[in-house]
Image (tube, rainbow over the protein chains, first blue to last red):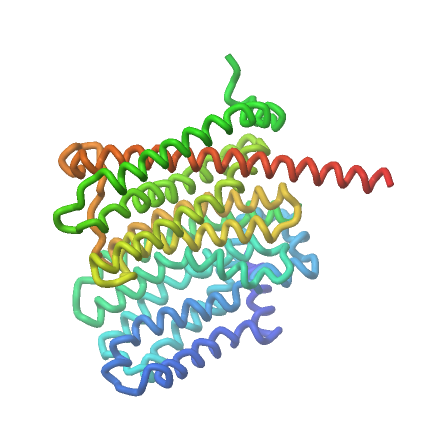
Length: 218
Length: 244
């Protein structure tokens, strides 16, 4: 499993595109928002938590179809499916690799972009915390969506349609925690719910994704 | 006494549904006409909401059926995944567009009702938002069915999607509740009498709900029959190509 994880990480970094694409998209979105909304810093700091969360989510969405599609095309997915490693473990590792190459960098970069959007001072730690807790859920949900659409030509658009409604709870609790953290309100409840969603997604969705892969390569 | 599982046989299903369909359709038509006419013309205006309250006879039943259609798809998907009965998968497929339209009716009538009552067509209220999300779920489900060529693969994948989607639909429901306390009034109907609306509105509403349930059953039967027939047609065409 570790070998598979390392292989995926190497592929993501060396083959180019996938790794930096999400970050670039995140940067572009954050830069475009002030042009669209106007440069008043009070407006920007009010919408910053939501924009940063939505940006991270969309950047994550952008790289989802790479999780299984490349391996499906060159046949290594069939090899992985027949390998002694359980398919559930394989999908979990793939999702983890996706998180390490998109979710984690997004989390680390987000505070820098928060400066551009004039994020209020208490927001930085909460931005780091909520993104660190919430983005694994995005990767695991996305891996499930990618597993569903892996056999399809041009499954990318369909993948977004399938995954977006599944992302709603994560987005709500993530952005809500961040907003409450900035306002100085109690954050325990949404934070726990966010963590609950992530843990639930990590626990259940590899099984659903593995089932979908099995059906797709049958 | 025959078992429920016999209806997994398409032939048996076709026979029974052919026999049931006219009756159910007729009953649905009668209930809808009686309920809607009764509701629109023979009930008094509400003392606060005036005549706009009458849209309730479309709004409440369609919202109810939008959720129940997903529930039925969930059960049908489970039956398909566990016991692999083709009719069940086809029934789930047949129910999805009906549920989608029910969701649309509920959203549209809600918007029309919302404008005079709340002064806005749309508000990011928990109930409204969760229906919008339900609408997206239906769209994704139908799109996935349409995107896959092999019918068994499509049935399997949409079944898995339906199961996972159900969990997330529930989660979204409570998430949006948490996110925003909204405008929407509480339940119009409930089993304990305290919360119920008055009998004058209640009985025609009940007839309308019954009408919508029957309409849903009739449409799903009809669409499932169409699905089975198109499946048979595919088989015939394939055989013809084989012979030629």
